[in-house]
Image 1: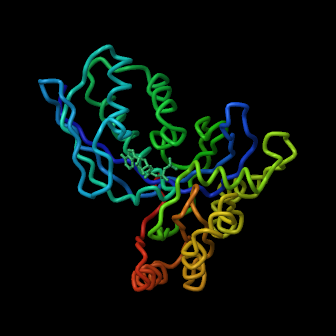
Image 2: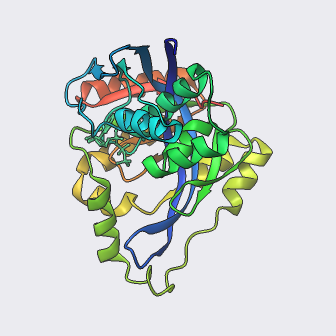
Length: 291
Ligand code: ATP
């Protein structure tokens, strides 16, 4: 095998709601996901001794077998019936445990590298099967762009591209674990299992995407996690307020938080908000929707 590198793009949820809770405890969701140009890079150099090593430019990323990149290589190797060894560098820009699918983006990038450099390869449907087993956001991170996800978020249908805009992504210091976030939802809503909970419609959001109407997109975003997580992570509300008062046409928490994204139609306003958040000691960056 040769060397290879690929980008893994962060995702935001323009819509995220729960549609039910299965007997095995998994929640089913309906979500509209959007990739961003904010991305990590995976660089793979094969090794002839079959060892797998990981390195990363930021501290705190697990560098053992628990890393989703490692798990992606192991899962791909198993399907191919070979042992793939190599040195892997993760260039990380996506904040961790933020609801931006950073780990999933890395796993997706690794699978894209393997698909590209493997002279034998596997069918694309099998690649998506591996992705789905690694995590519910991994298939979307391979597909990228704009899509609606059902099931655990991994049953995907592409949607019209997000209209041109500038996106500011910001993230408070204290992360949120996804299991904790779902436990909070279960406490708040008892209708997931019985079917009494009515999920919100995505019709207006999808129509706005079809019409290329960025104001319609911004006006119809929803995230069921935003209210409960805001109650325990004060920075979520502070960031949202800073974005909206700074000229965002809409702002919403992404995934199970605590990252918040704001949609801007004016780049200079977006830049000012990034500076203001920086002054507040909050990480923020500017990016664009990734097609
Ligand atoms: P999720 O909603 O799927 O939990 P997230 O976007 O909130 O994801 P990630 O950045 O994917 O958060 O990190 C979640 C956890 O996954 C981290 O705390 C880390 O221990 C683990 N992890 C495994 N592999 C990676 C990776 N390549 N990059 C970042 N975190 C990883």
